[in-house]
Length: 624
Image (cartoon, rainbow, N blue to C red; front, side):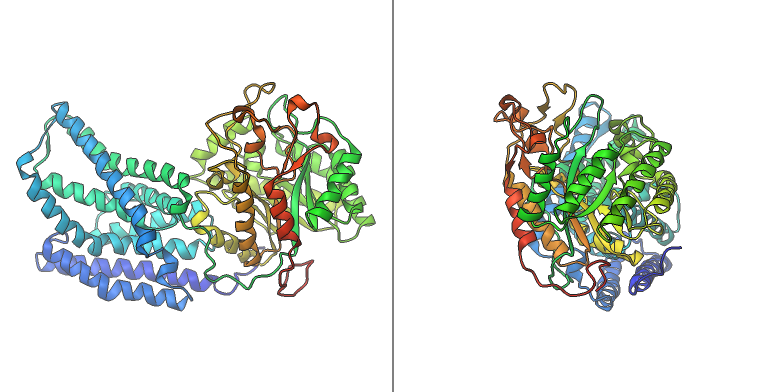
């Protein structure tokens, strides 16, 4: 059974429920009263009355609920013009452009008629009515459903789940207020789009911009008496959809390319800075992700032993995660690491294996880990896997990683589909491990996975900073704390090219795997090792001011991602390694310990070696 909810969880859920119910009741009451006085809710008197309700009732209520939870309105979404205007203006203008394209296409095609002489007066009317709609409907709904609700639920649920929940609440609430369920599905889809805009930009202002653009367009076209003479259903559908989609696509691709427009994890409500108890890095003993590819062709015990010494003495790591598909290599590397003074976290990976194959591998690895634990008590942790839904078969359709990743882009909207299968496999793996290994267990979960952590001792998440987590990064960490177990970031990191800071765990996507003998890099990437180094600094700042038990940088070296002075063949820039392998032409190999440190290497050494305050507590259990 999962542990009881920690203090604060129930209170936040009550606050969310109370605000949604109050918003719905107040809105329903306003619509009812306006109807009794024969005033249309979207007419001038109705908009003025609804604006007054927002300013006098709803806004103070949201403020009071924020204060009761120890938060402020600015913590819900940035309110300074410097933060609000870029997403708002970008989304509004993009929506206008998309709508204008549809209207222009209809006019050119002869399917529509428009009174162009009324456009000037229509624009004046649009400015007035849109301003009123902003306070009467747009801001209230966005503040509640893309502001307060995601902010509080973001500490409890995954980003994708938050998007779906707020969209459902939004659709139901608006349908109840209007007294009609005819547009329930359309409202839910619109809520999903607005929720995705929030996760992309880290604020509600892009959604406000889309809605301002759509409202202004509707008013202008209505005043200008736009009429579709033929194919009216198709054109009306395009009119309602294209503008919002154009805005989403522009924001989706513009903001990741301009990370300065999106807020990074803030230090609001941050804990006092302290040293993370477990400071680690990942080390690959040999992995294969596509047929014919192998990250470590040869096994050189002396080179591995020297790498472990560097990790412990030069990088100042206290632990290393050893991962790969060969159980014998895992055991041998573990022994080398333990002899060098490192704690070891073993993580077997068998890409494309089915659940039975994973269990069979776990039997062997857990048994060898048990033997090592007898020799080195309290020095080992067994990590039963990594992002199994994508790396392995049986949870998401697809015979290889590429197909499962594409399937996830669709199935991610219905996470219950794969989470049930995932947790069944994890329970089997944990039970198998417990029979042979008496030490702590964890799992390296993807952010799209919802794991039942009951069978495990530590909560683990591969938690990269990207366009989807940038605005809710701290919330995601705290959401994992609801299990009452130590939280470990089992993977974090970044690649070494301009723009990689927005890609997170997808930073290696530019690698072209079609020709393993002549691997190339897609796109015109510019090598920049400072991007990786800055990301390490940023995320360690977060972990040192959150209740994180451990963090493991991904990774020491990616042996088959070789450096090249030719940017189109420089695989290292799209790798997560903090050391640079030699070129293929040199004839040297990282399997023999031949590599050069990158900027990220020196940053990690500086941060892990720094003497930061410790809040105290048991370093083994992570208790405070």
